Picture 1 (cartoon, chains in turn blue, orange):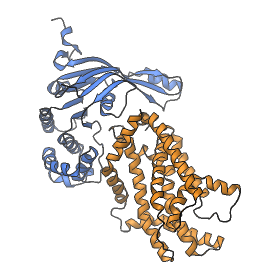
Picture 2: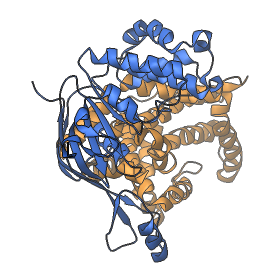
Picture 3: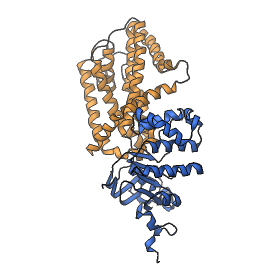
Length: 254
Length: 260
């Protein structure tokens, strides 16, 4: 069985251009940020966001990404999405990617929910016939009812989340990338979202979810990647990791 | 690295129904709920052209019949030729949010803005023909316009994308480029003709890339083909743009999400 996602020794540093004064540079170096800071001799700071990331994911894997703020989770998601190309190392991603990293991606506030579904579908590469066939399913899942034909600037944040989630999951992505925003919905929707994710998974897809919600990760994800300061601390099964101690389970003297 | 460039280009071309629809939508959305919608797009071009025609017509002793179509056609094409200065800088900056979250081919954004500019041109072309008809100077365009338009579009695409990358990296360019655009609007014969010029001034005009690009499209609109010099200049600048684009875009493509 060939892997759908394959990373080998991926490294990424990204430049920050806005800092100039030496004192500001020192101030940043003192902040308790997860990424390590490098100097390149000029007035540009490079943040070493990812270092030697290596893992493989296969059909049906659900990867949970955990780590402190600034550890590199969002950066890794963006590398998987193809937004950032790594400086070193190899990355191979086979499949149609649907990223829900930014909920407002491609939404036009003046258009109705229905029109936005069409735009979002188009942007993800589907033609109009395929999108129209999926619309009833999306409307039903998002429970938006009549609101689907009103401009989305009238929606609440939860409604927008439901709409985007509905679109992202019904348009059959091979690889779904999500970045810790699934909390923006009420409790009822949360359970629905989890059920929907599980049902997608029965169609052999990959999900990568970055989250601080360990309960969610333990429920959904079978594999786990722990990042700290851009480095990969652990990659393996979720059940072999002790979330309370933040270390592999078999290390505990039992 | 080269293959990634062509993959990006192909990806952008494949999404043609998205950027065509978006370009059309961007233009019409602004004028929703207005009564005079279409008029406002052509409005500034018309008003400037007519006032300039009256003044310069008096300066050069030319009738409206001679000078007005020349000026309107010039402004019309200059709108596209000056794309690099005005729209080019914003090609990536205006879509910063999407670039940082979704791996669209970068060429998609260039195709989108070039397409928008082209649609504006087509819209205002109708206005030009209406004005030409009004002063009795309506004529069938010379066939060379079918060759000139693709050359102009390639010029816009390549130089525009490079301007966009430059403006994203060096933010001063974002403000400098529009000023350069204004400068070129003075240096390019839109409101005046080169009939009485000679020597170094004429050389300056002939070397001006925007002049060449304007001439190859404006002349056929006025009924004749642009001169050989103008065509050679236009093709030279376009080829230069293409070559530079292959190098610049190929080398710095992956830095764009960090720059915007």
